[in-house]
Amino acid sequence: MLKNRIIPCLDVKNGRVVKGINFVDLKDAGDPVEQAKIYSDGGADEICFLDITASNENRDTIYDVVERTSKNCFVPLTVGGGVRSVEDINKLLNCGADKVSINTAAVQNSKVVEESSKKFGSQCIVVAIDAKKNANKWEIFTHGGRNNTGIDAIEFSKKMEDSGAGELLVTSMDRDGTQVGYDIDLMSNISSKVNIPVIASGGVGTLDHLVDGIKLGNASAVLAASIFHYGKHSVKEAKEYLDSKGIPVRI
Amino acid sequence: MNVTIVDYNSGNISSVINSFSEVAKDKVNLEVTSDLSKIKSSNKVVLPGQGSFKSCVDALNNINGLVDTLNEFAIINKRPLLGICVGLQMFADVGYEETKTKGLGWISGKVSKIDNQNGKYKLPHIGWNQLNIIKDSKIFKGIENNSHMYFVHSYEFVPEDKNVISATTDYSSNIVCSVEKENIFGTQFHPEKSDKIGLKIIDNFINL
Image 1 (tube, rainbow over the protein chains, first blue to last red):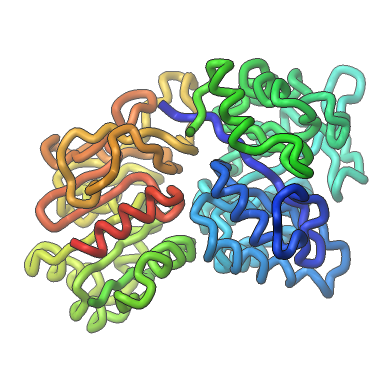
Image 2 (cartoon, rainbow over the protein chains, first blue to last red):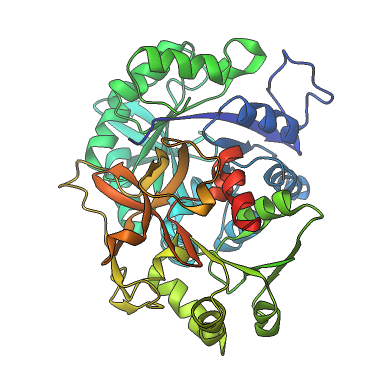
């Protein structure tokens, strides 16, 4: 049967890992390639890089990181952050990314999703949705969570599915960085409205939160950053825990 | 030995190149090309494929003489060829993604959308699923039954002759996961993204 996936995410800035694994004997703790390799050797089902490089002149650093990682990691690699155009997607795929996640550009112009999924296939197009609760709905935020668009996240999810997205990476802006758990209502709402897989993101602090994301949020995959950094939990521990709770995982 | 990965603008093949390079190291001369003479002189050919059935078939046909060269290589000269994902699907007579499109016709059958049972199953089928090996295949040497492989697809190959199926995987129904017909091999999953066990399959193919 198909297994639920665990995806560790690394924030990369100017080609260096910002937060990362700090507990193993790393030659270079800031090297994304080495960290990705540790995750994949530890059983990560996929690896995700979020490029948070702010300045335009350093944006090319991510291409080198992706190129070196893909020569060392033989599990799927998703890269997001600052992806603006079909040409950006093309460059990342050529460097060895298996999927590209699109956030702001997808909101501003859904044609980017339509064109890229047609050109490269839906399998490599992930739309990243950053949503925040407002009264009784969730609204889409762009530009790394700074701009509120007022767009309804559920409606937008369906639109992205129709535009050709292969997966949705859903992050709750209310929960991101809080370690109090995923926004389960948001995940289950979107998951029930679309037929493409949903990756839950934002707020994981314990292994039980991963369980909830899958069991209650109906996510196909769970993405987490900080619980895997600084040695709190390894991917292997997370998988064994999910397995003990009856969730199918690749062990 | 010369192994050629056919580069016919079928989308993203960098992971295929990386994984074959990792396995090939210095013992195999790996080429990534659509050059017909290089394909003809290869010992083995890899046919990747991403995107839709139609886009891959169109891309093959766009390179003058490529389909004939592949036919000669795999069907007339019976040299080993491995199709990956849509590369495998194109072995069929016909595919129904986007619109009805003629395939290579190497293994009789069709490629149709996976039955998602009215939304019960998400599509694409993305992630790690298990091999259910139903017949010995040379590329599964040393691979345990129920090993996990990485899949990403919404369409499945349905061959007429079930004897060509070497493994299935369970998603909605028993989906064809790999085929072997004489010198022709195909995997619906991505060995290049299936970690060490995927590299082992690539190694098996290279060492045929």
